[in-house]
Length: 128
Image 1 (cartoon, one colour):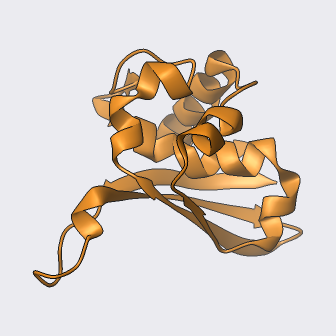
Image 2 (tube, helix red, strand yellow; image 1 turned 90 degrees about the horizontal axis):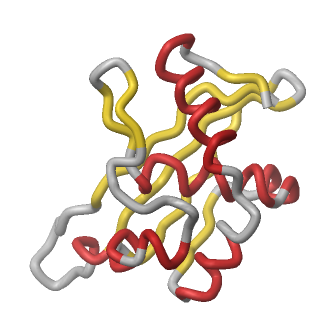
């Protein structure tokens, strides 16, 4: 699997009666068996505030690589893909439980995430 991009955004309200401003979307684009795929993870923005409780990271942004800040929302979909290879069959994941986010990051190696994101920023891809 080759990771091509990992990024996240804060959703904004499109209409006054919607709740997009409570969520973030994390996206990872990758190739698997020669096919380009994309996984989007929608999660409650509140988890960003609980960063040190749900992940091995203590502050956001997590890294600064060549003047690009790598944030928590940039890595959530990447971690979903890494932690569960079965997620390659999915296009979307929704996380709204704190325990689910905690279990997702339970055995994550921060150094591995840093290496992957550094490779993505500097080389435009990363072999996983």
